[in-house]
Image (tube, rainbow, N blue to C red; front, side, top):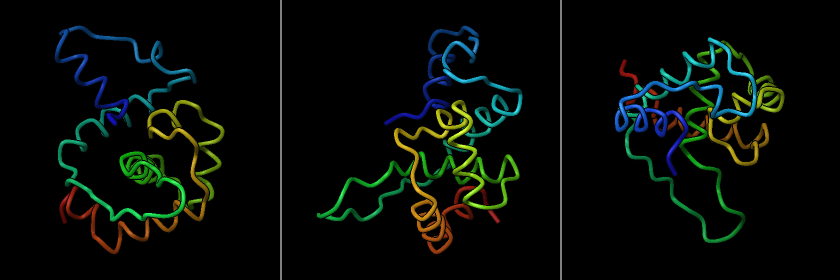
Length: 129
């Protein structure tokens, strides 16, 4: 599944036209949101191919791209706790769409996934030392 920043970048490259981001989002898009979208679009090119082992039982896992976007957004917006991030995702429809979630994951799910990213050193591989 392509993320919103990726789709916007492809649209702009293919058709060579600028666009108003606000038309695409349901929520209000601030200047910070626009900057975050551009940042994610640049960083997506450097993300390693991420394949998390899937389980055969249980519900489908959350999209890894959305989880990585939320992790990067947490740092970009200076959100210090995972619970604050989850609350902000619930309040800000634009941030929820930027990250690419269909349902918003629980605080525990985000914490576990972020711990996995730290263990696998995913951000260091992406952003460098």
